[in-house]
Length: 194
Image (cartoon, rainbow, N blue to C red; front, top):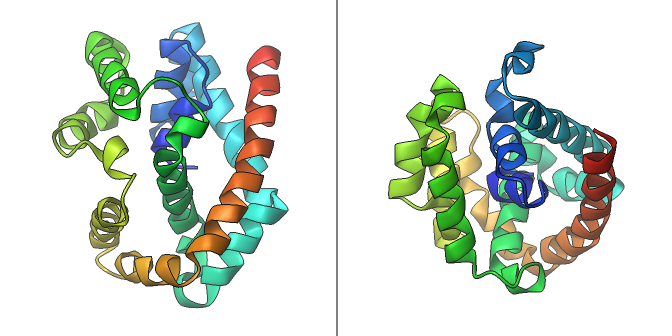
């Protein structure tokens, strides 16, 4: 799961959302230096990632891409699934996507003192280009995947992966729906456990 899904799966607590959002940039036990609810968000993120990596439907999506993108296939499917979440947002929330995202950006700004340096560097670009809302369109995720490809010095080929999305669009979307029902149930339980 990519940014939008991780934020959404965090429930309503803004500190859990922030922890889940910035978890990829937090190594080992460094999360223990953060406020308790942010710690919970980091642990939730890690649990969601573990659940996702072994889920048979997610693996089926990644296998479709593996021949061309190897270990980047999972990263690409994360972005594809965020696209389907954004595109089908009204099935999952009564709050319009633009409002939900604006509230999250405001939450980040209001809690700058607890953000990691990586998050602080990323935030202006993310907000200026409105990444989370841009996921709704293929053009939006195409830009994101091209930027990610550039960070790998174009070794990953992620920028080309939108062609596979177009080719297998309905199949990827159906897999997303099946997977997302499962991961929502998992995240709800995990939030209660943590």
